[in-house]
Length: 410
Image (tube, rainbow, N blue to C red; front, side, top):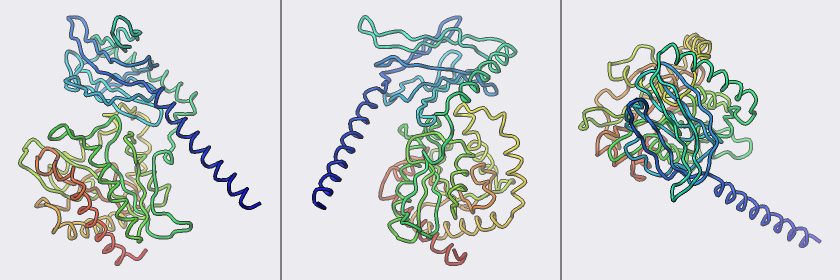
């Protein structure tokens, strides 16, 4: 009898696996694929065209200061090279695209002045040409843009309320590794900076910061869990956009004991290289730290997020900053990191710096931000793409965690 039950159980497992594989293949087959994109500049408009292998639905809205046109579609596969489109042309000054959240792919068009979509439509494949999504953008006055923005945002908000699939579920993004039953080992939240529609820095050879940080986060999570001394929580384990506040919320909801955000910077001087560790301060330790924090804190703006309802949250976070103990613990961990990284990683002269990073403002979790190097520097860019170098950094962070928790008993 037991043999029959065991056989039936194994058969059911096999059937479930086959069904999952079939469902995955169907989903992939139904995902539209981008074949290319191009800009056309005319006297009265700028035309943006996306070539696709199938038709897609779309919605759009407008955001001011800076002026942006946001186009949302179901998840699509945009692995085709963007060519020269990202640098813009005509009234379109730039383009970003990527997964905004599960189920939604976002395209952000930066416009150099107030502008409206005069036409947006799809064309079916015909005459050897693929399916096309066509967007015509024409200049307008600021007043007209602002009125259109309010109208489009009202429609967008109504869609959000009516569509339960757009609810932000951190659990759908965050991934915990190293958990076994009632495991009480310290939980380290590892935050891969940027993602999805927000590529972060674009470095030497077109390397994206969002890809570098995700690879480093995965390696660090593996090293920590393999040590048997820690659990690791990845705020994202895929190429998806997260709001800044979502990253800290994920850590807090999962009761993380420490939060580490991974980034890679760029600078106009390609000779400049080296890593640094940041902790929170409303007063930056130097001009470069202040400029970097300002740039990173604009991630939500870059991705086309409406920040009009964020004021109360920001105010409450700033009030919570009165909890100085968390900032002191963060500083202690940063000191441990610098000490352990010294022999394995090229560091900047002023290694531990202070800046007002929004992502470090969880009031009750010691937090640090690790700038792993400069993607604008060929040597740093090459190292950060090396699995061996990422492993070396992860081992140094593991030693720093050991140092930290030896003093600050868990």
